[in-house]
Length: 305
Ligand code: SIN
Image (tube, rainbow, N blue to C red; front, side, top):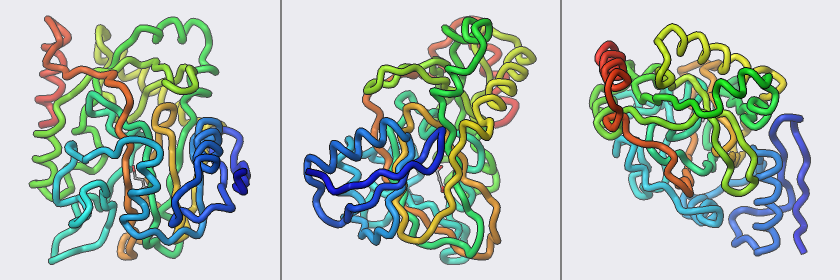
């Protein structure tokens, strides 16, 4: 029997998990309990955990196949464990880290690849005295609360996701940016997707979408702004204030998140992230587009390259 307790932290998302030491191997009962809570609350917070990289990797592996970070620049990975992406604003050897401003606009991890991540496990190693919070939005609620006419409009819509829309990417180390662009050409995903475990549908929008297919730029921008504003309504959001030692695990299949730059940038903020590989490939590379969609996509990409 599992001794784990689940304490809800928010209405839309978020629950604290106590009564488990993540350094120890998980029992099957604990794993089941965590998985059920994860599906229900989307974002789980495990406070006061001090994991080595090996322990974080072992815990993360219980929930899926670890992403090997092929989409990321090699310099941003842990030097001994490529399963760990190091999100750090520290200056090393006179150079800012290639992830110093990661996650600063609303996004669903790896939407700029054909296989969105299943989820992620983020461990707080160092944090500024105040701020550096992360927010998650529940995209089931975002879809379910749209009015029927808008729901019909987006039901079969597809969107172009573009890594160059990662906020602040152009301020990063140019070699890291060049790697990211080379590894991640624009991709297309459906706007409504179905969660492989819960069967619930959610809205896949975020601030890394360039446009919707088959719509003019003006239509796309207005619709996207409306959908993003709706999806990030405070009612659908959980905001986490980090403590060192927190492990936060989120379900990327029904949420988006943003890492806020609301802190003194001279103070270190360091997070280790393991990502779980998505179970299914829902995207395709945009070079498969035909006719005018391809033309306007190429023009849009050229304008920012
Ligand atoms: C991310 O995975 O987008 C980063 C989250 C964070 O650093 O809080």
